[in-house]
Length: 327
Image (tube, rainbow, N blue to C red; front, side, top):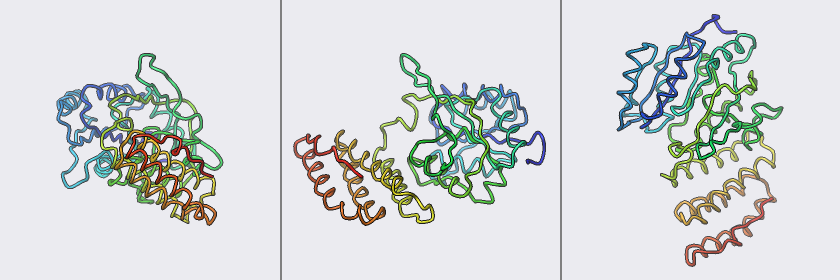
């Protein structure tokens, strides 16, 4: 249970140069049927009219607050999320993205679920909209719950976005759960894996209560800073493979290895050779964290990946060599 029927909900939104689209997000918060909320928009150093847009909302509604990420914190959404959490006052916490929208009953439904259950957090389904000529709509993932949720989440068999979750502050503070401010990619993936490894009991709502928009400005779709993003993703997968406390099955470990190879495959194919060489090294290293059988295969995989990378560097081709079967 939570301490009151209408606890204060802190909504924390990191943003960077989203002045032209964040209004849609803020309007969806104003429209919530649940009224006891505060909303912190944490600016990551925008150079557009973000401040002016937020100021106009603050004039209309004092529940909105505008913050600037402190200079001594790492640039990125993670530092903004952590900083917003530190200054917020709510008994419940909802991190949200500055290009998504809440359905009007989102917070009310989730507060009610927390009141009705003994869970420390609650997850809702999400609708995704791919902004193209057809504006395709689909669910974020068909599954947001399973009997083996940690492994299914790692393998993307079940998943959800950051905005789908409403947390009890006391729970987050007890477990000292924060976002890793050094990661450039897979931030939410990392956070949710650490969350599930400590507590995998949660309430959930199968109804989509948020809409996530995928467009050219979406960070996950951006082609900028590929090397740093790949490094974050690869380091995280090595960390998971090395973590004996997770007790991951071989199937999950092989999935992680295959996903590391996918980074190598794609970056080699696209001739991002700095990123490809990075993935090549992490991929080979990962063999030794799976089992003896996979360790013996590292020589074979070393020869194939070395030939493939050399072929693409020298001749710009060698697709057949990249089609490596891993098991």
